[in-house]
Length: 338
Image (cartoon, rainbow, N blue to C red; front, side):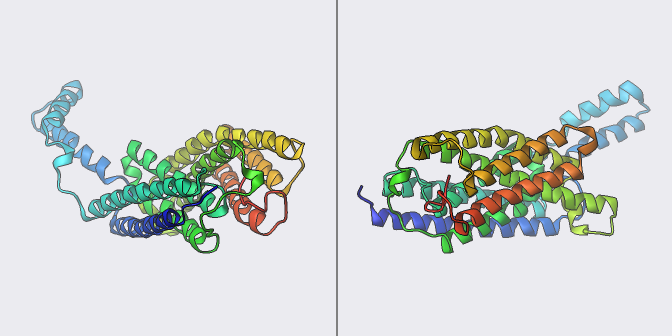
């Protein structure tokens, strides 16, 4: 199999460019967070202004009850659209951060595509590519959430922080030049099993960040004198919903990854399950996330208890990615994926 070294180098350039842009995007989001003065979405607060004005006019006209509601609604419809209002400095920095994130994601995707063409295989055949792919999924998942809930833009710096750290480690400690995969990985299961693991891991990264922020936000809500910087975050309930929905989406994908991994193991090694360190840790992560979803639906375990379980699951995933792949010797050690 011929490897295009020059194309692989171009892919590395795209990777470094995406990382640099993510850093700038994270800085923009951090500035936005620092400029925010109060809890709650500025967009939501501005959207309530026309209604408040309409209510005041209704009161001046002597209307009340249903008449006041109709008048407020009519005034709100006639009011200037929210998009025309002057944007605050915080919002301008935040929107710049989102634009940079989109640009970084485009370069990030291009890097994986180029890397795949250079090596003539799927671009997640080693730890460097695997980690890069997980980070891309996490960023895309974040942009999808942001598309549906623009007020969550204030989480941008916290989502990009682990992405930047992981990509920095991938580009330094885990970096591998473009090359064919080892013979044991030359199977169509690489595209199926590892793809599922990448997608699930990326979405679970977002869920883990949301749960960590939820726990910190709860500390402030219980005692406003503590962790005052978290007052600029969305409410604890919103963070809890983000973490739950992301985990609920990722869990069946992770289940599919575990099942297809067992099928691939039978084809490669003649057994479905051999309690290899990677297999065992992946199964432990599955159990932890299953416990989280069950706890989240149980009244007595909702809130901090369930969020703590989700954070533990995220920690197990990180442990599986680095310690198991790089330190523990097992059947997966040669590739760092699976």
